[in-house]
Image 1: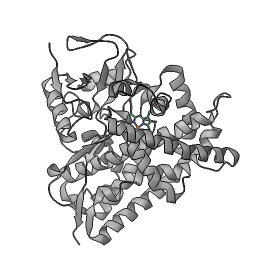
Image 2 (image 1 turned 135 degrees about the vertical axis):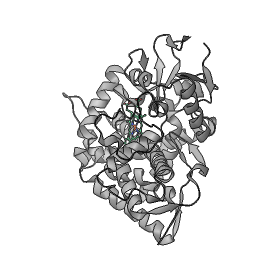
Image 3 (image 1 turned 180 degrees about the horizontal axis):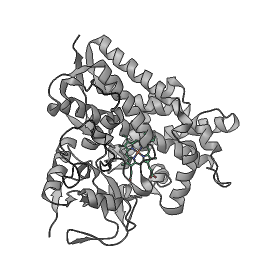
Image 4 (image 1 turned 120 degrees about the horizontal axis):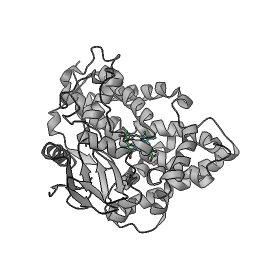
Length: 399
Ligand code: HEM
């Protein structure tokens, strides 16, 4: 049986791609990307099993091979981070970072995020309206920089470097490769200086915690600490920002002008998860086949990129009741299936707790400020980098 063909991941129009995978999932359980030949696994159960299937490994350097990056600083660095490592090497990095990067270690963070989000909404209200997403664009970077101890005056620099680096988690164009390479060089230089500084003069921040993190006598080397910090920065900015965009889109499209202000406090975490389920910024967790891989009777070679498509799994009618309906209290019910936008298995998103915290505070501030979308949610233009999101979310206020 020949698999249906859809646009390759991250190539072309983001909105059209999302419609194409949903349509493909209603017509079958798998599809193939037209440009790179990657295989999309679409059904909930197959995605769930795929996330822990030992015949599939992490994506490694497959995106870099497919994008034509055979060597250089960018590739070397990418090959050393958690996302591209497996087995013992991956486990070691996860264990060491796990000692430092925990919700408990940063308990006071929520208040800081809340104040930042409220200030941004207040500024927008004072102007009488504008692009809501633009006003929240550096929220995730402010959070990460605050954790790391980056001076406020340099947050803008970090934002630009990390924005240029965000395409590294997918197929890249030559222009994106050049921009990402230049940005990585500058970012690593800056972070290396910070790491040296904290090594001689520790403080309470994440860099100091990473330097001190120890597991049975094992520690991160200086280079590994620099790699880890850059890895966290790049993994957390574009993903969270684009999820803020996607979650706001869901609120405006499905919750209408009411903005859920009634009883929203008790269900905030459920509301956040429901928006992530309905419109995950990252549509798939990528893997590489370690053995010939069979889908719908067609066998693919070792090395095939397999996209475990969490976006369609999150709307699969086989497991979700009314998957296309926005139900703010869906995740208050313990029997609700698992939303899979953060992936699963060994590579499950390390920052899921931080992303949820940031989203909760962003949505709390928006719900309280009661902005109104200007125009129709379906007319918003979309873009994609690591994740996909509306380019802008124009809002006004009714006094
Ligand atoms: C809403 C925002 C986010 C989304 C949708 C997201 C999604 C994902 C996904 C799909 C993966 C791959 C999972 C897999 O392959 O099974 C991942 C991995 C990862 N994420 Fe996130 N993420 C988000 C925010 C963050 C944040 C804030 C951080 C940290 C600051 C972070 C750090 C990481 C890291 C380090 C990995 C690699 C883990 C590994 O390979 O072991 N993410 N994320």
